[in-house]
Length: 161
Image (cartoon, rainbow, N blue to C red; front, side, top):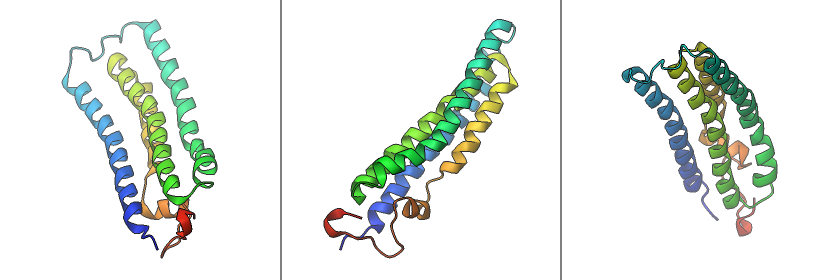
């Protein structure tokens, strides 16, 4: 019998660290943007640059946020449900990492747009990415559900679920 609580709790802690780094990167970028005045608003008077930047960040948000949220269904079906549990846990970690990277693009792009152009559309896109990341919170109970592990123990015959 393999005890699934230890690897599952390690996976949960690892995913929570990734999630914390995602949020800390947003806080760090806001802190840098608020503290350094040299580059803050330097493109605010360039109308074409503001328009192009807004368009890129809005399109990036419109692409990445739904993709990050829908990617999990495909990832789970393809890489998690069809493999043994230990491989499924590794695939779960990779899937969460991909989701956070996809959400980081509009987050960082939106915050950079805001601080470079003072365009409120940048903060809106960053807020959308941060809100979408709330749907990716990696709790241990959620991991049990997603990995199809029952409350007491998983079937461990040869590592299969």
